Amino acid sequence: MSDRAWVQGLREDFQQVLVEPWSPYIGAILMVLVVLGLMMAGLFWGIFGGMKLFGDWFNNLIGLGPLLGIKPDLDTPLMHRMALMNMTLVLGACTAALISRQFGIYRPPKLEYVWAALGGTAMGLGATLAGGCTTGGFFTPLVHASPAGWAMWLGLLLGAVIGLKALLWTLENIAWGMSPPRPLPFSAPVQRAMPWLALVLLGLLLVWTVNWYDSPDEKLRARAILIPAGFALGFIMHRSRLCFARAFREPFMTAETEMTKAIIVALAVAMPLAALLFAAKVIDPYLGIPPTFWIGSLSGGLIFGIGMVFAGGCASGSLWRMGEGHLKLWVAGFFFAWGGSVSSALLKHSGLMVTDVNIDGLEFTALGTQTYLPDLLGGWSWPLAISFAILVVWYLWLRYNESTGRFTLL
Image (cartoon, rainbow, N blue to C red; front, side, top):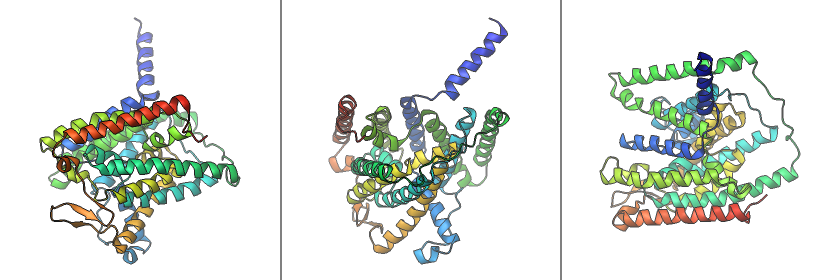
C-alpha cells in the first residue's frame, strides 16, 4: 500500500467518524454511559438548575433580584454543578461542530426570534412546575424509577401536539418576518482552520480538567469530573443530532420516529443498569427525583412541550445547537433561563413551589411529592415491568403511526 493510499484512508476514517452524522442510537447509548458514569460518582444529570442560575444572575444584574426574593450571594456558574455542565456541553458541541466544519452563524427569519422568546419563557415556566426540563423532569426521574418522569412524558406528548398545531396555524396566517436573512458564510481559510481551533479547545479543556483534579481545593476536585462529562454529552449529542424535542415532535409532524426510538432504547438500557446502582447503594435515588408528582410534572410537561416546539429545541437540544452557532437557540436559551428564574421566584412566593419535608423524610410541594416506585411497590419487579410496558406501548404506537400516518398533523 502506498503512502498516499494510507493518507487517503485516514481521511476517509476522519470523515466517517467526525464529519458524517452518527446514528441517534449510538448517541443514545453513549449518552447513557455518560449518565451512568455520573451516577457512579454520586451525581445526576440536570440542566434547568444551571439555566435558572444564569437567570438569577441576570435578574440581580438588572435590579429585579430583591423584588423577586433572589439571594444576592449566588454561586458562580463555574462552581454550580449544573451550570458548569451546561457550559461544557456547549463547548463540546462547539468542538464537534468545528471539527466537522459545521459551525456557523445561523440566523433565522425575524418571526422566529419572537417564537424563541415565547417558547423559551414557556420552557422556563414548565421546567419550574415539573422540577426539571426534558432532562431533569423526564429522563433523569425515569432512570431514577420515579413516576414523575412518566407524568411529564404524558404532558410533553400533549404539549407537542398543542404546540405543533399552534405553530402550523401561525405559519399559515402570519406572513410578517418569515423572509430568511442572507446567510453569513465563513471564508475558505476560516473553514480550513476550524478543526485546528477545535484541537485548541480540546487541549484547553484537558488542561482545565487536570488543573482542577490536582487542586488542593476539595470543591474543585469534585467539580473536575463534570468538565469532561458535560463536554462529552455536548459532543455526542451534536454528532448524533440527539434531541428530546424532536423525539416528541416528529411523530406528530412527519411520522418520522428514529429519534423517538433512540430515546426508548436509551431508557430501556439505562433503567435496569441504574437499578443495579441503586440496589448497591452507589447513589441515593431521591437526588434525581423532583417533588412534583403528579400535578407539577404533568402541567409542567404540557407547558414545556408547547414551548420547546416554538423554541425549536428542548433544554439539552438548545444547548448543543447554541454550540453549533444557531442564534435562535441563543435567544431561546436566554428566555429559558430568565423565564425559569422569574417563574421560580413567583411560584415560590405563591406557595406552590415551596419545598417541605413530610414525616417520611420526602420532599413535597403543593403540586406533588417525591415518589420512588421501588419503595412504593416493595421492590424492583413491578417498577421495571410497568416502565418497560409503557416503552413497548410507546414503540408500538410509533410503528403504527409510522406505517399509517394517522396521527400526523401535516
